[in-house]
Amino acid sequence: MIELAKIDDIGVHAQRLVRVPKKGNKGDDDFRAPFFALGLLLAGYRWTSHAPPLHSLDDSTVSARPEDLIMPALELDLFLCRTDNFGVLLHDPESGETASIDAPEEQPILDALERRGWTLTHIFTTHHHNDHVEANLALKTRYDATIIGPDREASRIPGIDMTIGDGGDFTFAGHKVHVIGTPGHTAGHICYHLPDDRLLFAADTLFALGCGRLFEGSPADMWSSLQKLMALPDDTQVYFGHEYTLSNARFAVTVDPDNPELQARAAEIEDLRERGGFTAPTTLGLEKRTNPFLRPADPGIRAHLGMPSASDGEVFAEIRKRKDNF
Ligand SMILES: [Fe+2]
Image (cartoon, rainbow, N blue to C red; front, side, top):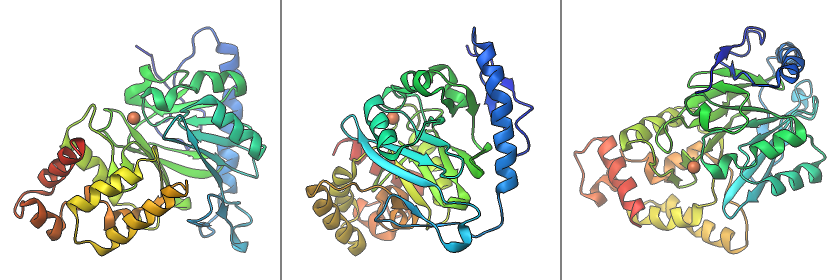
């Protein structure tokens, strides 16, 4: 059982971010804490009321408008790990801070860092599955990166330094990060939302045209989690954990066959994957219009499933069950 201790020195910008005490490595811990706290305070100081940057869907790099120059936009790098895991790096060009969203595999992350000339400073872990944490210790050893992860899965996250749970906030290079607890795929799964940058890292909770399998939660858990994500703005860019979109699209059209936007999207995905392109990121608005797991209230889907008077949760559970057997 990992013992947790509250951090007092992080300042007002980090709430409910909790340090995991290290055993036998106290000097290193003490060395980094003031710098992390100072960074958070400076980041807060730099944060202005300027409008958030725009993001281009056809370019993984976030583009800045002139008025954003005081607060440079974060840059993103998206690449494949293992067979179908997405690796994502989040980089602040001003401070040089770079976070890896999960750590599915060491070498592709090293390659991306080298290609960009970035140095890893953080890992934001979403859940304990091995294909999301396998490279934690190797990257931590190489870069001394700080690993932040879900409080409910702290004992299962290798090398974890800080825990955070549902509703927690912290800043990364001056950018607000809000943590949303999304149990269902695992019991302690969390998503990282950067509201001012309109970015969501949803990992294995929400996929393009799909959602995560229910390994540790009920359909009601997952439906509740997805509803939290659906409450975010439609222009939120969503990065997710796996390139499962082709399979998801082929399933989605069987549940929602009369949705013309889904039909068009499914055809585009067939073409994109044929050419080796990635389907990430997506947007929340697009998912709300085409992802059947977010549309159990849709009359067409209900009619197709023969569930006109069921609850949204019951329709969601039926869709999830059908996908498990697809
Ligand atoms: Fe997973």
